[in-house]
Every structure is written in structure tokens, then in C-alpha cells.
Image (cartoon, rainbow, N blue to C red; front, side, top):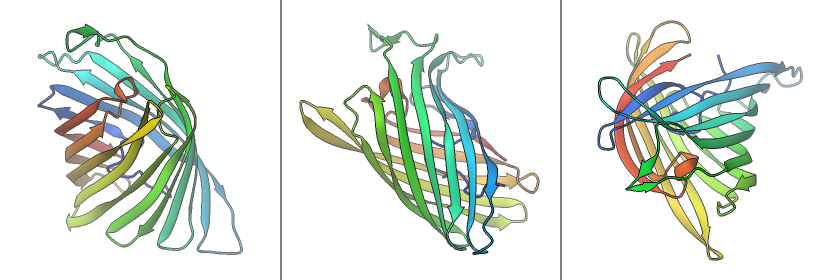
Length: 246
């Protein structure tokens, strides 16, 4: 079991799942894994635990063509290292140093009657999240510091706040939910314009074994696109789908 579980509503998390956006006729497919590799011993403070690990995942946007045909339009690749720990029984943190890049794939050629040209989208960054955990709710605050980026019009710091919850309803059925907010800045003619990014998820999780489960979820997103090839394009959608928990 991970010391720091992925944030429920944050899109930049390792997860295995998919959800369908009926209004846009798109499908999102997330494939990834996060693992703790090393536990750093601490004999002086029993309440303090420190682990080092890694994150690898892909965020893919697919288009529905009917009859279970889903050409891939864009894929974003994320990989990095993380350091997680708990300061006490209630306070946890996670720091990641990572790379993300975005790519157009064979399923995407035309956007609003013009040809979409691919370009280099690449970021290297450090993000830090601090959480306060209670029995059923986890609140968090943090931010991302980008130290290398193409294109150059992306603001180098992205603040972030949110919360999530995992509450047992009955036997092996749990309610899960979360909300995540980021403030993303884009530079235009030497001025920076800020956009709020709102992401929410609620669902019911069925526990299959000690650390594994399957959830059915409703998703909402409003803000700049999570996919780098469309990083300066506003999106707003709802969706529903499934996620596998490990």
C-alpha cells in the first residue's frame, strides 16, 4: 500500500481507468502506476516515515467512431521520482520531480476544419503537496514549479488546493469523491492571464481485496485542457466511467 495515495480529482496522478464524455464524444484512457521503492528508516521518531518511489502514466484522449472504435487523438506521457512521508498521524507530504510531454497520434488530423499541426510540448517540474488527513477526509494544498518548458508562454508556478474522501457506506462499498483546483497562467504580449482549473469526481468503490477495488464514477472538468497539445484551449465537460484501484 502506498504511503501517499493518489489525489482523487487531480488529473496528474497515476491511475488505471477510463471515462466517456458524451457531449464531446470523447473517451479518456488513463494507464499508469505509482510505487514506493525504498523505505528510509528512522529510529528516532516512530511517527515519521519516509519513502522514495516512482510514477509512470499515460493520459490519452480518444475519439468515438462507433462500434467500439476509438482512434487515439493525443497522449501525454508522465514519468518521475517521488519522495513521500508523514510528519505525524495526520500530516503527510509528497514531492515529485517529473517530466511530461504531449503528442498527437494517428486519430487526430482536423480541428474545426483546419489541420492541427503537432509541436513540441515538454515540461520538467517539481511539485509539492501537503495534506491533513482525518478519518474520512483529506485536505491538501501545494503547487508546481516548472523549471524547463516548451512552449515558453506557460507560467512557471501553478498553485493547487483540494480535498478528497473515502467513506464506507456498507460492507465492501465505499463512497469516494474529490475536488481539485489549480490556477494556470498563460503569458500573452508580456502579460499573464490566469485561468482556474476545476476538476471533480464522485463515485462508488467496491472492495475486491485488501488493497484492490473497482469504482464507478462521475467526472466534471472545467478549465484549460489537460492535454499538452491543446494546453491553451478551454474545455468543459462531464463524463462517467470506471477506475481500478490497487
